[in-house]
Image 1 (spheres, one colour):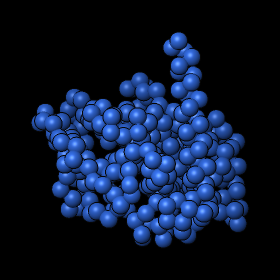
Image 2 (cartoon, rainbow, N blue to C red):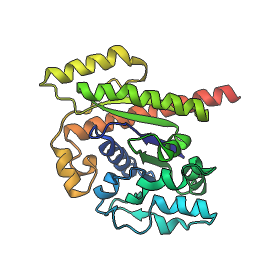
Image 3 (tube, rainbow, N blue to C red):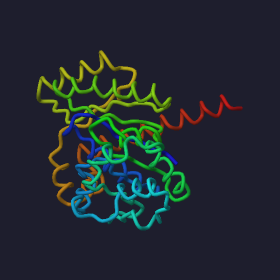
Length: 268
């Protein structure tokens, strides 16, 4: 099972869009894919037409079950989307109280990891939309992920937030000894503006080792796809945004293949 987390501590940078677009493309390729919404704001959940304020079964249910040491049937927390092969584990706004309620309890950082172990024969890919703050939910995401994707809007304020999330990653890595890899993804790139070009130049000069070489462009079709509740690559496959996410997915799959081959060589 391939597990990617999509994380940034700044909102509005394309985090949910990235998760939805990549998941839609994977499902289209015939891969059984699960989207997990760990953000109390529930943007991913809302994208597919569900209300995080009123939803009855959600990620929060898994944490309640872990505290009470009971098993949760898979079917009771997962929702099927309109897209064949794409399932959703939704968020509830109750997640906002998770750290206060359960954060100090032992084992709370591995709830999602343990759930995914039970579902490993069902899904080929899992993509996690992370919360914007450091806490038990973000630790859960990083604890089970092979790779963390960091969408960064190509504008100055978003760049300032990038250093913060990288510092968070280092803290979590050090505390929990997690081996996940990172990939920074420049988003909302507007080739007409100097701000976008300057921001991209800054990323290339300061984060070259972990930066995707291409960009996700500004595309008004993202908004239309969101209204339709569909990933843009399935809504308008030939749009600029769709083609960019197709290129990103190809790159990610190639990176994962190289990582697997390297691991195989070191273990044989």
